[in-house]
Amino acid sequence: QVQLVESGGGLVQPGGSLRLSCAASLFTFSIYAMRWYRQAPGKERELVAAISSAGGSTNYADSVKDRFTISRDNAKKTVYLQMNSLKPEDTAVYYCNAVPPNVRLSDYWGQGTQVTVSS
Image (spheres, rainbow, N blue to C red):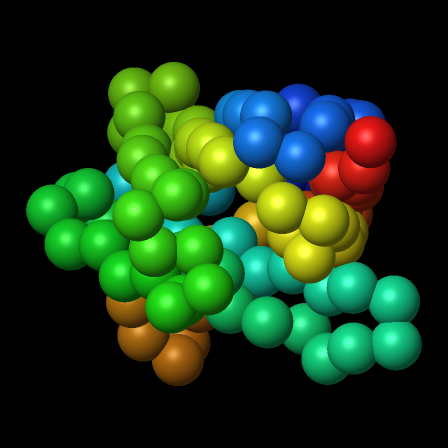
């Protein structure tokens, strides 16, 4: 059974930092692009950051650019999201998503991890 397991969420004060991790199992992690999404209460799911399968290309939502950094370690089958200078509006459930290289393969989602930014 394929799993994506997020960790690292929690409560942090504005201006603080968190590092999210998403560990994958049972599939060829290195061929999948990876994305982080977030969903705040009452809002649609939003794409936050993406990284290519080899890690050479990254993209960010304008709202997190220069504050968040996505990275991956294919040997550990893990993708990370380093979040700095956190703001209350970053409060959301954060999900990782594995994007397959072709339509014959499935995409996968983690269960989500809560990030709350509050004083």
